[in-house]
Length: 485
Ligand code: NAD
Image 1 (cartoon, rainbow, N blue to C red):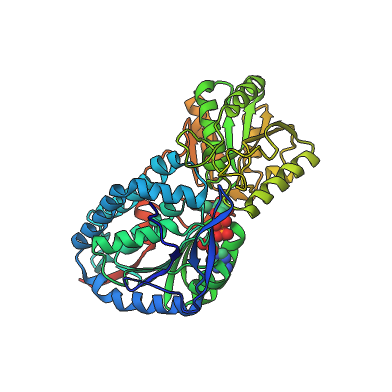
Image 2 (image 1 turned 90 degrees about the vertical axis):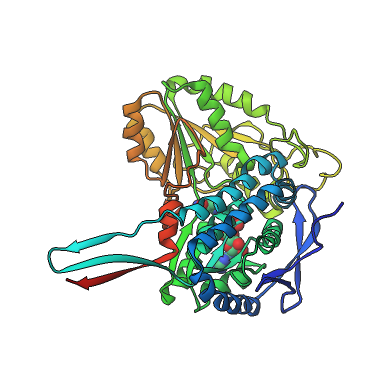
């Protein structure tokens, strides 16, 4: 039975509404290449309506005791868990990711996001400072007003909830824009928010393209806070639009993450971890390790076993339970992947596995966007393939001789999002982690998540930090109140 609507409308002031221009975009299922629903093709007029609703809702929401806001967010988390199967299926159809991944990663983590911030706001502390015998200062953190929340297609519900939950938990209201490529779970979340009793106007979702809706959000004078996750090129445009308006901005952008394996690592764990970090969600996670560096004495053994294991990954229909590798999100992304695989060969790389469009996985998916896990060796570290974000199931493997050399390799990119280091030498782990320029360094693990830790990138991977206290601080304004003695 069909549960999704044919047309995904905007959610403004607690109601599902047509975009003012009456236009819709096709919403394509990546596994089939066919439109399976339509999504509102909104413009700045719809953003204006959403801002008006958010502005109207703000004074009451701000005054609600934290305990009441918390209860509503907890209800949202419960309802996400109740609807896990429905949401996971919608996410899998929308994105092309394996249903099993949506069910075990994306949707549970979206529920955790709401639960975490629902309880975090009950445990905040305010700083106080005594200024000698002269004054007493305390810090008052107040919500900033309307937050503009813009998210990408790769982890649609998980990343959108990572922004919505802290923004509204702190007492802000929000105008959110999911990616136009993957709008379905945001639509379902709006239904859940309504059922959970979130007051009208606290969360508004405007669907549509970046240039029309995203740009209208970043340019809107009444939206003072912008939390953006997406590509680095778009991030630059967002920063340019926000700077003259002095908006508070957080940018979570692209990555080209190194994965470093020392010869003393537990090789079984390093191989299993590297296969996962290279190919989870078809390599379309900003944190995926797309450059693997292996100490020369372990290189051959690692490459052989890594390829053997990767070759066993089951590429298939995302809705099939045994599928481990699903579809690429759209044709443009698939073309980009193919472009880089060609470029790698021109740059001297050897395709050790994959690299070619696969046979159709079944009849239903005949016109879908599929690409197999691809392993490339023998590339110079400084070539484009090794420096630019591909965002697909493509990984390069390069040998290194010593610590200093591999730290240089790891840092030889404009990006600085995440890295992983595999070694059993604790001193080395600390030493290397300290010198790698990435916002997260995982040691002997990957994608382990603790919602209290700061999350974000260095260099072209972004500015600002999300997660835990960082998010609570981002979505509030710190005011110092100084009382003379
Ligand atoms: P994208 O930059 O194309 O789009 C992201 C969002 O921005 C979409 O909602 C899009 O419609 C919107 N947008 C586009 N143009 C805009 C504009 N001018 N103004 C405002 N908004 C605009 O990114 P994508 O292709 O959807 O996602 C993939 C990228 O996201 C990759 O680079 C990936 O590394 C990155 N990413 C980063 C993180 C992180 O936490 N650092 C997480 C996930 C994805």
